[in-house]
Amino acid sequence: MNDSLWSRALRAADARGLLPSRRLSLTPRELATEAAHRGEDRLTQLVEGWYYPASYGQIRGVLTDEEAGRIVTALEAQTEMTKTDNARAQAITPASEYVPKLRVTYCDLCGRALTP
Image 1 (cartoon, rainbow, N blue to C red):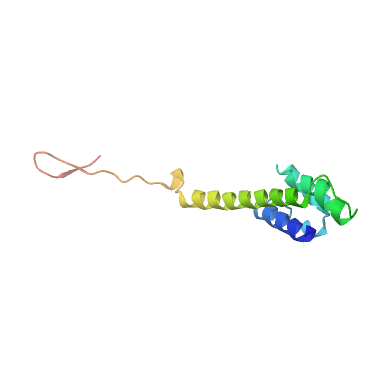
Image 2: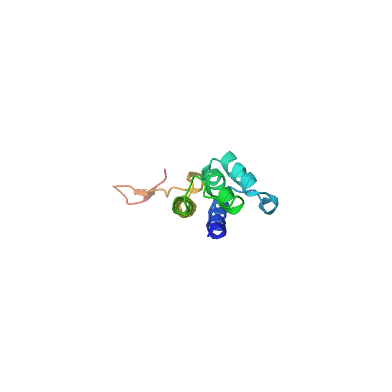
């Protein structure tokens, strides 16, 4: 259970760009610290309160498995929101690329197009 929840947390953090590229050589605490530097402290909560006590101390930490699961689920939900926001941002044409169409007006007398 510990490894699957931790793996899910890492996938969610990685999908949001919170983990460095050298993540395979880092300890869970170092990964959590990197994520915290990028504004996400929930990995630190997981490492200190749940993962390390259960994995290395074989004791119950401050967080229960259920609480850890809720944190991981929240991380995954935020990842999905981030993906949705990124997709929306890409779908919107930036103002610098927007070229307004010129509206053609015609002369009331002769019907010819007038230049702006």
